[in-house]
Image 1 (cartoon, one colour):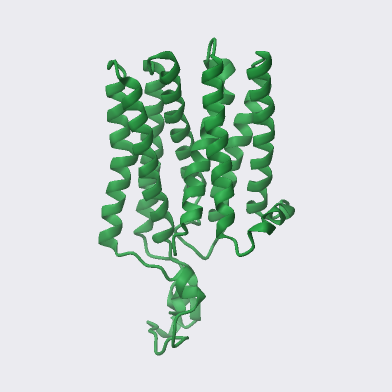
Image 2 (tube, rainbow, N blue to C red):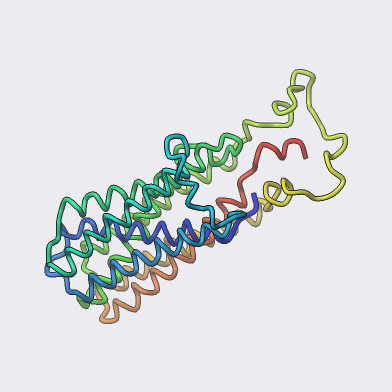
Length: 304
């Protein structure tokens, strides 16, 4: 399918931002004597990435000014549920951050609600793609699991960078957690990629209902020229190029960040290494998310 850059930026930015807010929700249990600068930076970056990503997603709509209507079908649509969860997350997180910043009240209850809502929003994003039965590659439970794990991995990488920025060190415990999250997220993604190599369940034979006659081949194309379906759903990427991009995504998104985090633990310039780890991970996520769309094959292409 055609990779929409606004949606790619949305899923990467909002995923990492919501992951950061989720870890800030656990702050009352993990952060002691948090400074005002730390809280402002962490909450500010989390809100900026989450809101910036959500706003960018509207650019993919034909009528962006009507985006608010997407939330009206929350009973049946995961897209609506994503929007409702996102707004609920931002409201609760804002109250939680405000009480902590201005009154010194780090409410464990509001923090847990923030974490749950943030992760619920990311899960709903993944469910949007899982429910599309016409795309075999997406219609698997590993799809929302990958979204959730990548959000946690990105949020944790951002969290240890900001923590080191204001405390002077990353800390072996937090650094170990970040590396474990990165390893788990990319390991599950590799299992997800293994499914991309399987034979599609929807074929020309099943689409036409003529499979009982034998192999079905195209006699003549449905259209003499290009159309919306071919532009949006007919995007293809060669297997050789996909394999190279997968390798680039893993190296940038996992290998380099883990090596940089290891360097940051004993080094005096750990903030620099952790900052580079964040940049590398986000770059790898952009490649991974581009492939997520580029490798997807819609069942309608059976007729082309």
